[in-house]
Image 1: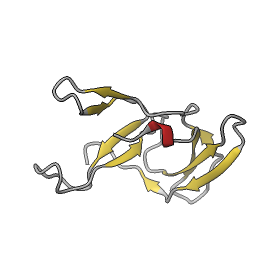
Image 2 (image 1 turned 90 degrees about the vertical axis):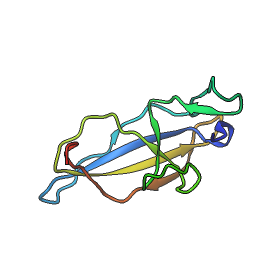
Image 3 (image 1 turned 45 degrees about the horizontal axis):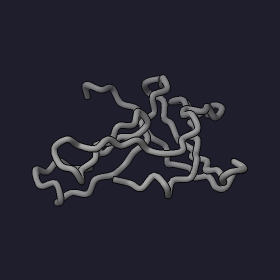
Image 4 (image 1 turned 135 degrees about the vertical axis):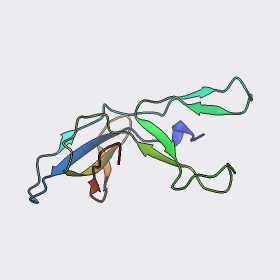
Length: 117
């Protein structure tokens, strides 16, 4: 579980790039995120389950051994997209309590692919 107290408030923006290479405007794709929501597991008292619509846990490879391959936390973009376009994300963090911009991070371009491929 990630300690939500270390997370600074942030917003996520997305920019699209057409197959021809033209880029669009930045679009906000999250509300102001101040924490990540977890639920306690009924199985183990010390275990927690990620229960946040904006985040997902994933591994680059499948393994039955839960410790063999590291887990990663990823932002889930629920905003509509156009298949065939590329997208990149900008995360903007804010100071508290003033909510002034503290930092920003830009992702690499991500390509969309059909779900059944």
